[in-house]
Image (cartoon, rainbow, N blue to C red):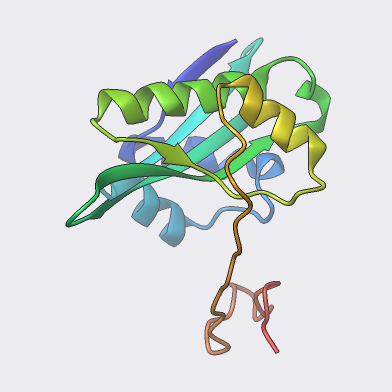
Length: 153
């Protein structure tokens, strides 16, 4: 398995891997993500095929420094259980450390046992329980006119 860090020249590669994402990547959003400093996209390649990805975003605060937010992890169904997820998370962790981040974090559902095993297998700890609050802006629609799946009431 090979983990590769993608950059602005890898637009076509991302667009050719819609099976790894929740929805097919768009040119506009992919370009923006790959061009942004502090945004990271790593792909796992097995037998010449892209089988997974992890994305991370560096966030910096004036009194805390910079940490890595593991934004999303995706592994093709056919490649699950073969270590791709753990390798991707470990690679992002190592990249965060190399870039001077003081830590890395991720949120997942408490009942997502596969994700928890993957994150813990790559060295993640189980901190005290957290509460997530979010804001959804109704005027933001996904491409194609479909409303964002996260709505608040």
